[in-house]
Picture 1: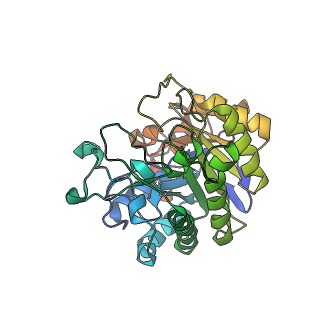
Picture 2: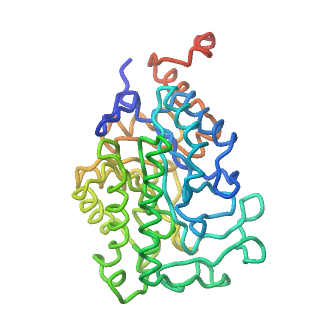
Picture 3: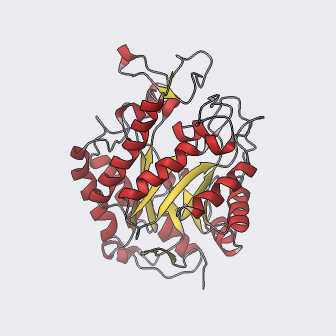
Length: 356
């Protein structure tokens, strides 16, 4: 049986063996930004499980850019060595290693989920957070420091240097995180960006930092490897970033050389109203794909092989990214292939279990 989900996707010099990707998912298991065996097993098992692209969790470009003290980081050359072992393993499983570079902005300095996702004061192991404007995510939280021009230049430089290290670490896909209410998204939305300088106000000014980060990353990132940007297509809040602005931004990102838009939504404000349901974010990816012509990735309560197959077969997106479903089942690629009647190669160590 033929399957569009299991068709190849060529992006520049990289060929994905199928359209199944693992979304970046924080594991809150690092120390001082360093990866360890948990990350190797977590990411590696999804490669042995048959997914074509494995994107590493939001990896902070600076210590203050971490969501929690337990996030991965790439602000030091010392972080590279362990990551090299992870990318080498993923490539050895005929999968593609990707990395998401991120800065959490005002949503930084919180505890891991199992410690309550609570904002950490500096005497609790936290740090001073930064944002485009001095507006906290929650009214009861400490107000972040407004980034000045020097601080903005540092953010751009941090992304640039992290991209250089990502090349050395062996990643073949790089995604810039401009979604879910983190720093670059904070600059995009008028709900969190009240600046009156060249980085605030108009649409052109609010997207300026993201474009400068993209261009800085491109200076270091191989022109032969795919560059992705993850956006929140809407804030799901009145007066916020919206789907029309996402279309305009996607057109511009395509023009400057971004290869694929990973289309999510929400995360910017605590009063968002999200109509959750299966495929609830797919229409945004479909609209951007059809109206701009850029490749898109679809996410959001896609949990079955047939859902994913329909997204690709009906031209709604070019890639389907899985998060929680892949936590429940690391072997998505292998299981989905069986469900759709597609014969795929299994790891030779597992071949004897291929037929039931």
